[in-house]
Every structure is written in structure tokens, then in C-alpha cells.
Length: 619
Image 1 (cartoon, one colour):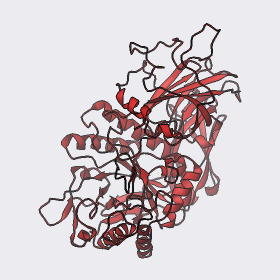
Image 2 (cartoon, rainbow, N blue to C red):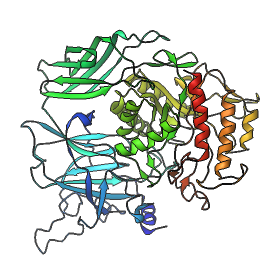
Image 3 (tube, rainbow, N blue to C red):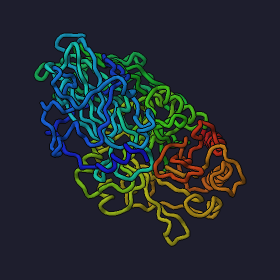
Image 4 (tube, rainbow, N blue to C red):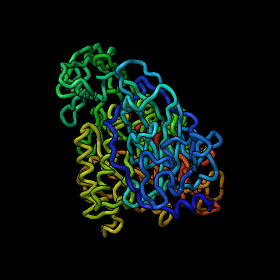
């Protein structure tokens, strides 16, 4: 184990906070804004003892403390002692995780300080400037020119801060971000996960310049038809809202244009929000077979944003999932946000194209983005490709369900996930967690998250990967998790033939569900080291994994009538510190249908064959 990792584990002190500084409300649709990228090489300092944040008595440093790492490291004269300093010999690429960029950081969990110097000339007088982060894992403390802009917790959702005019300079700006990826039992996720804890500024960073009165966010969707009915495509009912920031007390109006639908309408703003209600002419519905996206323009004063939006409906109706009023079978695959060949966090459009292209090659129409919100390139590309999306927050395994602060952290991540992607037609499922152990406390925790999701967005399904009762005494495996009462889609994970027994156990297994709702298998899988070949009874061989999936797909044909899809675990091998068979795993979860080297395993083609069959059945 390397020294940096050992040191980080030894000094896992509890977080101590600066005076609370909250982030400002999230600005969405960043790609349509006037943005100044801060991506590229950032200087860094490794700080496992958090020396830049605490003094030798372990007290938080004062704002003006010259030894605080957010303050300048430049000597005023030869006698000015500085015990920290950034320089170009120590740089990290942003966006990117630190673990894959330098061998000594592979296992590092702790603090790294990032620094970026830049000049910035405002485009317009009187404009506002926001500093936007796509994601930082896990806790970020952000300083500009020695002033703290704020903090954020949560490694997979965006956040931004308003930059005061008095802070931002035309020349010589110094942006410093303290990044801490340590795990704690009262965080989300908690101490125990089954994926690599990639630290760093893992997604895009930019300055966003907007007019004094600007469009912060907007949402558009088809109005819900009667239950079980398809939405109208002629004189279609579109509804939504536009949130305006600034200009309080001034009469404001918002203009909405959808040229492809010959829509151009104006709506009044009341208390910062314009309510949208309109009828469109002849509308083409978004679907996996025809992922139609419309250019949408929203204008408020001097601000104008553009997005590409698809219109569709999704609902759980009886025992079926209906997309645009038609029964849907989800040919899915679970995906971690990692590029296997590089062993790194995925973040770019190219990365999204690689991962989603693999899914398309398997003939998937759906992806489960596990176990946290993936970067925005994934959901936007899914919109274009016609891939349905399950998006999830990392309420994973055994978090502190009795802790009110933990609930607030989970709820915040849920809110940020929904806010970023509520205009993505591809996203049809918000998931509030995975494999959480049954208790009254846990069920109430999750029920409240489901209620929060529905309050923010009632146009999508809400789900979670539930627990299975393997001891029902009825010669049947029952999905009777009490959380099933509250979800729209009953989903569960099963690994028959991998964790206990052999794959032929599937032949005598029957499934039942307590709830008259659609049923979805959110995970199943078995490990195989790519390139290892033997007979089908040999664990870790591609042939064993192939046998596993042949037995699984045969069993799927006997599932209850409410069975509506599956997302096997997982698209590609991924790093996990829990996987320590040094002959076959070596720190990797080998359940991928694609190997660490990016090669398709035999089981990939078993699932493709099954999906081809199901596509024909549901045409």
C-alpha cells in the first residue's frame, strides 16, 4: 500500500466547516450559455493532513492567514516565509479524476488543493458571472482571489456560485478548490460501496456570464393524458414553466419558440416564474425508434437560451410500463461512469459515445446509469440516440437512515439530479437508491425521498432496487419489500448461480411480487476475466459467464406477466477495491460483458440474441 494512501487513512478526521456558505440556485442548460471554460491543466498540492485548512492546533485557519492555501503563495520579499506553493511541475487535468492520472494517487483518499490562474474580460457591463462545476468528488471548498465562494457536498451533481463584482478581476485571478474525497458513515454514499472512489474535479468547470435578468431554468413536457391513453399528437398540450432571476418588481414576459411546431408565444412572469400552457400543431413523439428532438428557444429580456427537447409520456399503468401509451419492454444494461481501458472516470462526449455505442451494439433501448448521476453528456447523447435512462442517487446499501442530516444530503442530490436533467426525454426513471436493507426506518427514509421526487417531477417513474425475500416458504422468491408500496416500478437485483448455487438453479426458480405493478430486474450477472477460456463449469471463465446468461435468459421467458425488462450487471468491467482475487480480479469487478481491455465477452452476444428476440416480440 503506498504511503499517501496510508497517511490519508490515518488522518480521517471529521469535517470541520467554515461559516456556512450556500451555493446559489442551480443554473441549467450550460451548453447554451455564454461560457468561459476553465478546463485544462490545474496546479495541485497534496494535503493529507489538511495543513492548508487547519493550523497546528487543528483549528480552522482565518481568512487572512498567509498559510491558508487559498491565499497567495507568492513571496512579498525574501523574508516572507511561505510553506506552501503551487507550480507547473505538479499539475492535474480537469476534468478528470486524480486516481488515474498518477500511480501514487491510485488509492489516495484525502485532500488535494487545485489552483487555476486566469484572466477574464466581461462581455457586457452590468452582467452577472457564475462559477459552475459539473461535479467535484466529494466535498469542494471554493475560493476566488482569497474569498470563499462556498462549499458543496456530493460527488456527482452540479453546483454554481455567484461571483461578486468586487472579487472577479480582469487579470490575474486565482481560483483554488479544496477537494476531499474521504468517505464517512454520515455521507451519501457512505463508507461502504463497490466502486472506485475517484477523487477530483471530475467534470467541466466554467464561468457563466448572464444578463442582470436571466433565465435560470425552464421545463417543458407533454400534459399527462388520461391513464393508459396515448398523448395527442395533433393540438398536443404542452406545459411547463420558466424561472427568471433578477428584475424583481419589473413587469416581465417570456417568449417561447419551437419553430418545428410553429409555436411562438409570450407568457407573463409572476413572482419570478412564467407558467407555460400551449397547444402545438402536429407533433412527433420521442421514442427509442424515433428520437425526435425539437429546437426550443426561450427569451427573457436580453437573455436567450436554446435546447433540444423531445416530447413523450411514460407511466406505470396496471402491470405495464407505457411509453406514449404503448407497452414498453426495457432491453437494458447497467453502466458505471468509467472507461475500462483507461481505468478512469468517464466525463466527455467521446466517453459517452463509447459507452452508449456499446449499449446500442447489444441492441439495448435502455441504460441504467448506476449508482449515481452520470455526467450530462450521457443523458444528452441518450436523448439523441433514443436510449431510455434510469438515473440514480447514491443511496447505496447501509447509509444512516436515522440521521436527518443524511436525509437532507440525499434529498439535495436528488433535487440536483432532477434539476439538471428534467428536460431530457430519455430519462424515464428517477431511482432513489440501491439494495437498502429493510427496516421501518429505512422504508420511511426512502418513502420521503420518493415523495420529494414526485413533488419536483411527477412526469416520470420513481423506483429503487428493492430487496428480495428468498425464504418466503412458498417455493417462490418473493419481491415483497415494503418499499414496493411507494415506487411506480418494482425493481430488484438477483444473482442466481453466482452468489450461491450454480446457473442451472434458474431452471427451478419461480418469482412472485406482492404488488400489482410493473416488474423489472435491475441487476443480474456473473464474473469472468476477459480472455480466460475453459469449460462452462470453471468460475471466472468466459464460458461460465456465457452459461450463466443462457440460464438467465431462459428463466426470463417464465417471468410473471408484469415483467417489463432487465438491466444486467454490467456493461464493462470496472475498478473496485472490494474485489481482491489477485488471480482474476486484481481490484476490478469482472461482471462486465465487456472486458477491462474493451473486448466483448461471450455473454455479450447471449444478451444481444435475447434482445433481438424481445425486439421482434414487442414490435
